[in-house]
Image (cartoon, rainbow, N blue to C red; front, side):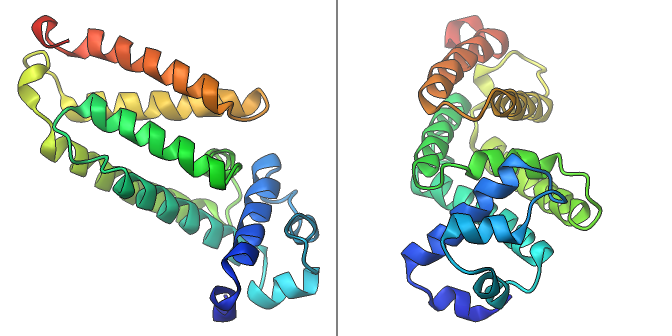
Length: 205
């Protein structure tokens, strides 16, 4: 990657990033083209290749950028400060909704990238995903008040189940044409209510 990319004005960087998110979120890695991304970003294809040597380099940069932006927003929303796991998750949902205001295709891209089967990118993405998942889980579970949950509950398993359910919900939304942010807010509130009923002691709900 050409470091001169980071010297570009933020608005131009954002156009290129959003152009990549948009194209890669609509097609598989193989079927996406640098020409389409350049058109979305309103720059020439030759200039795009000046900043990124090839499609793989751009794709992996976008994946890492999606991860970085997500963690940055989670930190800005103080998502891991409460001891209430469900408050953490609600703050996380609000952070991601606001992130999608600036990067409308970031969620679509991240979900499609997670399910991408192309061997050129699959291994690195899955390794990165596992590292980030475990880091987030460790942050959350290190602070959570365990006394409010049913005795003997495996909190690590519960967290993983809720995380995968959330990812599955995003994938379902993607199949229906992309995330509807207001609908997602409403649905996630209902999911939180269901999880509280399922996992919390009756006197702590």
